[in-house]
Length: 485
Image 1 (cartoon, rainbow, N blue to C red):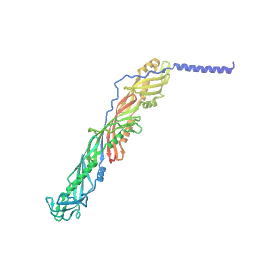
Image 2: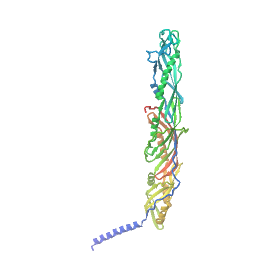
Image 3: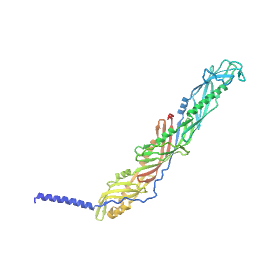
Image 4: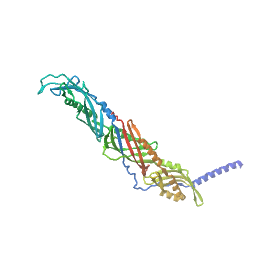
């Protein structure tokens, strides 16, 4: 047989031997695949998220409302069909007048707002002798008041009381106060004082103005404005790519309502159930509910559920632990263990399941369980008390007992650590930024978060819920109101 032919045959036999040896060694390597854990049902459950109470002082600048009233109330009043016709309250007197007002002066305290101004008027009148309603003489020549001397003056005021009903309607009750003459109006050469008659005619005009004010502003419906705010609260907000905030408003209340100087002060209360999630939730819409009963709280006290996705937590763990390897001595034989992949799983139990894929001397999967623990002082989340699940323990003891080693569990514990301080601090900065901004033209909020504390950890089936409480202050300033809505 030629040498070359012998060489090729030996080469073929050698390759066949290598392949057979590899197959034999592979068949000797144990593939470990225990069943997934079945954690016993416990009393563990996610308690209902407590209502967060938010009490917001709102300051509404009344000057734009004053300006609106100034614009919409006539500045000049006259007797009917002035200057052609006369007002004749009785047989013996007749007159006609023109009246102009000064700019409104407004002030308020509590739930009462006073509007007053000075009126300037001129009047022309004449008289005649009457007996039992029958004229015995002609009218005297017309006498004038406020034409050849300064206009006569009178002070006029309205008192306005307001209240708000559960359906957001502000009711305005207007009272016309008695006008007070600052100057007498004496006409004709005998100096007859007709001030009383003038005031009587003025009252009729003022009553007509009162009726017009009540018609236009007697009931102001603020529900469209509250619906706008409600819609904003129902939106989902991106906290600078750190997560998504959903306020979930539930109830609105008015704690107090009063006027001080040129501002209307409203203490608005809101009950909500905010949630902070890593993934973006769907937005919802609803009609703003009627106002609920009074509460005397101040500031806000929020309870927020932060929902941490297990895949995200697993990725953080894998970034540190994948590829870590250990050598073990089993009698005279050296064994190697390599972390291939870890995955955190929720089980609606106090404990999490940790799925570990490994390779090395043996390969396969094992399951461990651990309990989430939060250190409030350090703002640090860790998985502690990690131990082999009973099914994995049985499988390892039967096939690869050398893997049943505390070094593996200690290693996972050392890497299953999550520093939430940066997350909390970042959330505080993000929420503060959200609190201090102009939402719409003329509507601005200001406030700050004073404290954020994590108060509970709930390992649910799909997500790890971290519950936090948040205290702070929030105020709203309204510099203008669009009554066209």
